[in-house]
Length: 307
Image 1 (cartoon, rainbow, N blue to C red):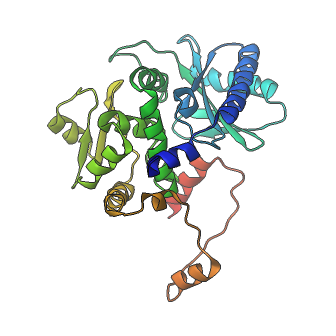
Image 2: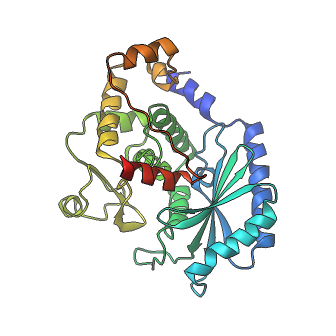
Image 3: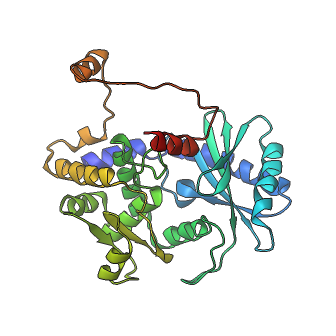
């Protein structure tokens, strides 16, 4: 068994934990179906695609509404259903790019996202910012085999340990869907790393060859441009900051040169003495202020504007 095989075994859910998560998710979906006055709950995210990591407790559920339902009516409908389904949970409304509910149930976090049902094809109608997400799940399930799902897990774990995973405002890194597209494009973690190590300046990826590279690079001005296979008008990597893009290239080059690849999958913890040594002769100012229990996406948007 190679080094990466050992890592994959450690980060993949075993049959017992996978069954436990499946039972929990099925119970949640059953409860939502019973309590929703309108809309159809659909599992999304890494759990739906089979690319979630051992220990992951975050669940994404989209509730699909017909186009006859007004957008303003979606969240109240979801809240009523959530309060009935999760009577002992903490439920918060979040308003980042699109309103949704974030539910905290013990150590679990469930995002309940309203969206409109959409048709298939390249010219479907988008009425909200998240409508295409349901097609992302269908696309990955159709295109990705089990071996590739393991490679996605490796890539996600690597990025998580180096602070580069997550499309949220706090991180501005690589989303789960972006990781899946990178594996579809290159086939494996090692091939993703090998290609990323050779990126210079900007990089372009179009899994389905939907656009001409020059046209796309002129239209999307981010360092990394990855065309969404289900919507050629969208750059999947738009949220990846320039800093994180080049940090990934640097990580890839170190990974290629590294003699012990296992070290890249170990969480590094700093002792008090190491931290003191790091801040010595530096002028560091810390700000502390109440957050009023704001949702992370909102809070970090405010922090970045403040900075």
